Length: 166
Image 1 (cartoon, rainbow, N blue to C red):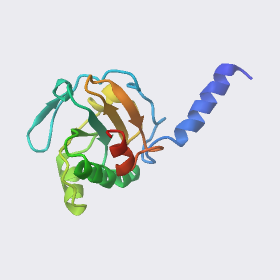
Image 2 (cartoon, rainbow, N blue to C red):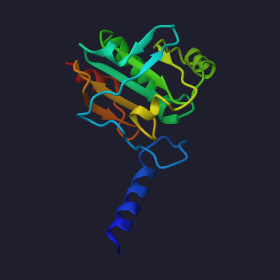
Image 3 (cartoon, one colour):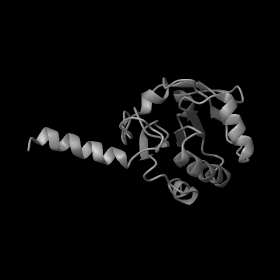
Image 4 (cartoon, helix red, strand yellow):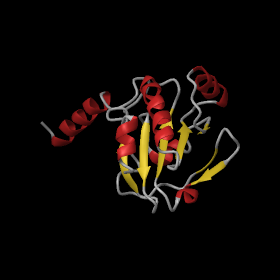
């Protein structure tokens, strides 16, 4: 059989197991990977605070791409909240993928979440990082280099995430 066909079939099968079950197309396609620099982004958080990539320089950080409609994200968000309580000095930037302020705010209230988030009506910021699959968790060092990357198949617990900063 043609190696290109075999490779395409394998990638297709792997993609079935690597993203939020609500994604409609081939999931977990990465644009930014370990060892890459964080892409340049500029988002406004629900508190009105602006966060730009350059603001994260000088300390480690966690950038999370999510949607509240995704069951995998819903499982991960409480872990992220616990991580934030354990490591409040580590900046956490939550960026929605096609999620409104209203839907996120309602979800946050229902689940007693307090983390700041940036609602995004489209995939403009998301597409800087990935093409499909949520949640996406990028851990970056002080030089803005991605040191760890997680998706729904290996989303870390609060403890596992905190251990990366010990």
